[in-house]
Length: 181
Length: 174
Length: 166
Image 1: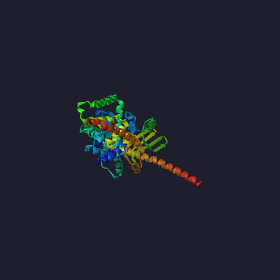
Image 2 (image 1 turned 180 degrees about the vertical axis):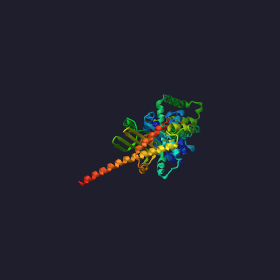
Image 3 (image 1 turned 90 degrees about the vertical axis):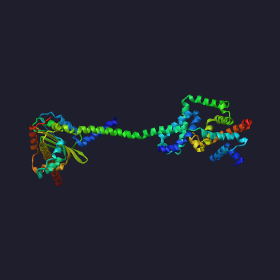
Image 4 (image 1 turned 90 degrees about the horizontal axis):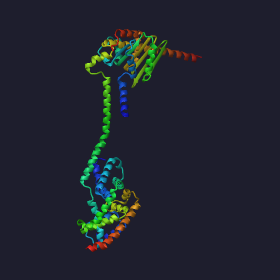
């Protein structure tokens, strides 16, 4: 009987490692599913499959499309106008402590905290979690699939953009079209 | 060991095992059961016994042990032994055993039966089954010298008895 | 073989000095020859030995019984490990199947519904746009972060320089 349980657990681990988002992250996102203050974005592998139908419109976005094509899923929890942004950030940070993410980078910039965490699988990054908190802003962004950090880092270099502007963008879009669950 | 090898190398020992068991138990059905048990055990442990110097000696030893266990375990043993004794004793009077040859054979069986157990076993393993001294020593778990001494004593006893039969028994009948 | 040899062999026999070959010779002699009166008893002894060998035997029915028992054991013995492996494999498959069911999207008929329920966007273009934005966000924030690190490195490099200049 013990053997059976071990085997099932083993399958569990293997299966989740390869195919799915981290369980801790998954439950973190589920926890805020009904939270009206946060914008929720979920894009599943099914949707990513449909992306392959678009041709890259111009050469500039080619790299972007390439990066996207390797992804299997995306989840975002975000808001730029909440009072207790730091509390959300702390909660999110503690909920991933139990999972086997490795810290890639942690930045404390004045009132804002930022953490990048990754999960490696066979030398490749299989999941990237970004947490931003403070100053009424909270973002938890989870990418899974095959992630090439160098490629991602290159994406914004030529564009001279401020990352936080995009957050505002996401927020507006999210509110225009609230999550349908 | 595959079944074919077992059939060719182990199974043929069955008669020796059977007679050996019969010597302890004196009952054919019980002896048969013991032999069956021995052969099946030999099969179950075939990988282990394959490396043994003599599988036959191993089977014989097991036959002895199982037979002795059987003797110890049941009260049947004593009554069976007594029945056997009765049969030999009454043989002379039985109408079916009244021919001369059979009469003498039972006499010889009685002679053998009267030998001390160890002497009889050694003698029978040597003279009926044709085992070498060393093999007898292995089977019975006694040292070589013991084998020789017991064989010598058994044959000396037989010699005396047979000479007396020759001197009186048979000559009288003729 | 003359009687004198037999007598000599017999004497050796009684003293337990005969070899197995010599004993075989005696057995053969007594089974084949009429013997003089003084050897009648001895002859009976040797004939008894042979009779024991010939008549106390187990028949073919016994062989069948043993072989039948053995082959039933044989199959049990051989199949046990395979059965165990099969059981484990079945478990594996069952578990894998269950997981697969819970992980993979359900069959075609419910697909549209499920996409609606799970995905924030039903229009792939919107979803694509969103993903693009998200990636750019990650990218720019990551670069901001590394910039900090680079600044730190520069700072520590500067410190090193100051130290070494002292």
